[in-house]
Image (cartoon, rainbow, N blue to C red; front, side, top):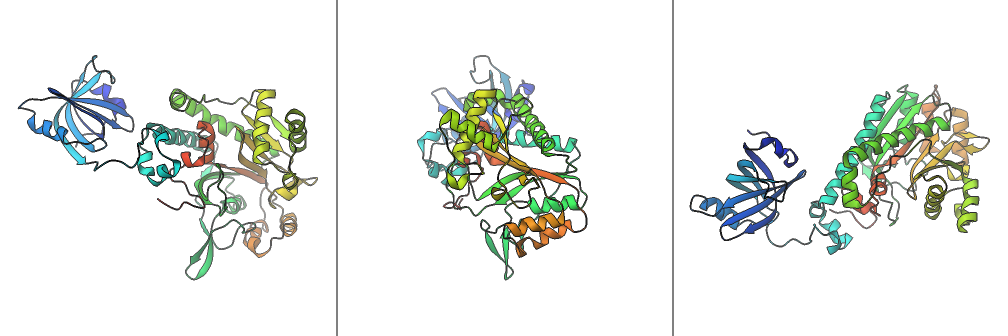
Length: 438
């Protein structure tokens, strides 16, 4: 069995027999010669075959091929400076059609503007053949892997928490209910309670990259009902500043890796310059931000969102920070306790947390957690929470270290990094209130 060769590595095999597998990108069947362009996830290569009696069987195979069929080809790889595609070509000895593309496709995946987003999502398996889309997931993989490696280098353990839970977490207003052997169960909104349980168990530093579910009837560009969350929790934090500093390092690690490996391609395909941020990221208190946004842009927060941020405020916050500091990131602190979760630690009534805004959108809510049982019980009562959080409160009865953490939406940071404008573009398969297939 021959070792699989990715096309990006073909230059190592000049004047050798190779076996390649991929999609047929283009077919040119001329009078005296036939050309195929074959692609795999890493690149493209030209296959050249003269028309003659010796090649008659192979000529017939190519004559009956269709674009986007898949093939396995054995042949000799030659260097040829006349070939515009990477200066090389394969002279085939064997061609096997491993699957044939039947009929006209329902969309032209090479041109994303040729079909509506709904059509593209209906045929996502075709839409994803677009080189830009493939690059998007390579970039996402690089980003997440770099952050994961940073955590492993800093003594984190990876955990895997249940996605079926017996009680609706927090308020229960945004959970999906499922039948669990005749009893009610719920899809987890986040691993929040379980990663805090890990702190109570003495695991010290944990992370998880896993699905989360929100029953939000929202059709905005940045919301989805089923997303991937990169969750982090760590013990013995001295203050919020320490947690923000850690997240800065994490983003710098991820963006540095992406810029090094894919920066040029991202510029070519998405027209986006990957910026590795400098430390420290700007910080601003919410009330101060309100004042600056009103003074600079005439923005005044609407009544129901006072004490918090909304999408318009996030966009203007990024504009303000870019104009004042030349920075893509900003931490907003000192939110109202009424707008924050009951488990956020407070000092003088102020939650010890922040939102990290990047390119006009919230990427993270990070916070120190309240680990003292008596205080936590009171804060839960204040929010009107009772039986739903009883199991969670048990974690803190028997000693639990001070801790904090945050979660990053993987799909959202991909959207912001590549500036696609919608989660529908950056998710492998999008889920929303009106989409449950494919």
